[in-house]
Image 1 (cartoon, rainbow, N blue to C red):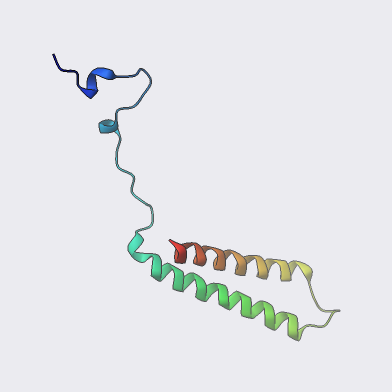
Image 2 (image 1 turned 90 degrees about the vertical axis):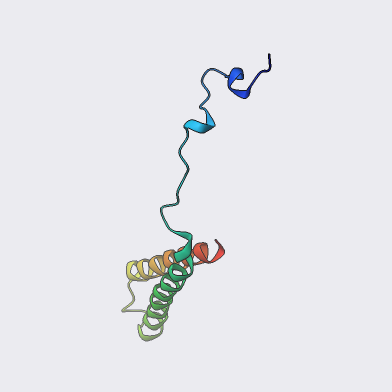
Length: 86
């Protein structure tokens, strides 16, 4: 009598046939569009940061505003590069 793979079940293991296929929450076809949109938003915040730094004096600068604008720009640029590399 010939043994099959189903005859070698290990307790506590999940069968491959019982698993459902993983689907990505973001369709890979929209990765290029996401890259362009996120890069555009990131470049906007980067330009805003540079304009703010150039036009403000040392007396009118606000460190929290600088940090917030640079953080938002960095996050958008980071996710844009992530989708670019995928």
